[in-house]
Image (tube, rainbow, N blue to C red; front, side):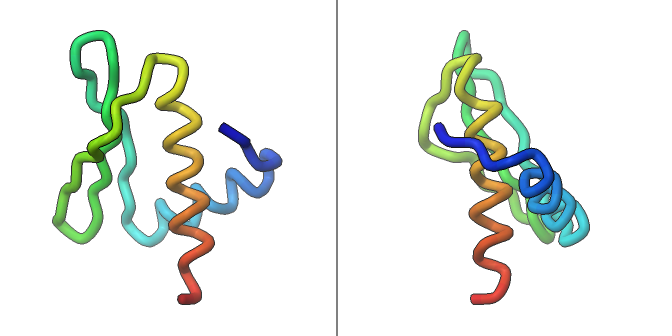
Length: 71
């Protein structure tokens, strides 16, 4: 997975935190799924990630939410 430069990552993460998004991994055996909380709603992702993949997946979600802010 492609990561953005660190300053952009932090900008996207800060935006999500300020808007009330919580994104974190949920262990399932040796793997993980990503959970998103927003405005009292919780959604568990369907995709399964390894212990080396979930971290980048969360950063990609921060960026996706940040990019969609003006839609």
